[in-house]
Length: 94
Image 1 (spheres, one colour):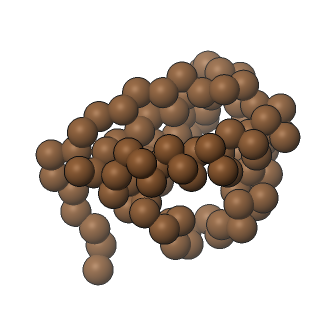
Image 2 (cartoon, one colour):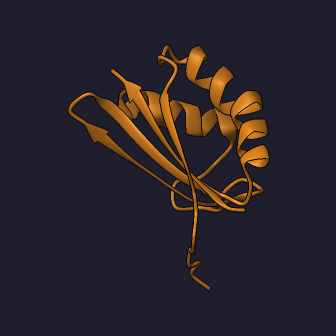
């Protein structure tokens, strides 16, 4: 079942986020990692909000452990506060 993950990074900056994306080898506006359907990020008054939709919780967890966690720590970001929701429906651009 698809899951939506909301990650709030207290004190995070867009500059730190851009560094993480570069370390992951991802391109802004490009393809998502394997297993991910959708991703967006925005600056908030408290830091950063990242929202992803993944095919499964397990795929997200593996990516988070292998990439999100290590790379956000490398650039000095705090661990995110996360909320996970089961997705009832989603649409993908063709």
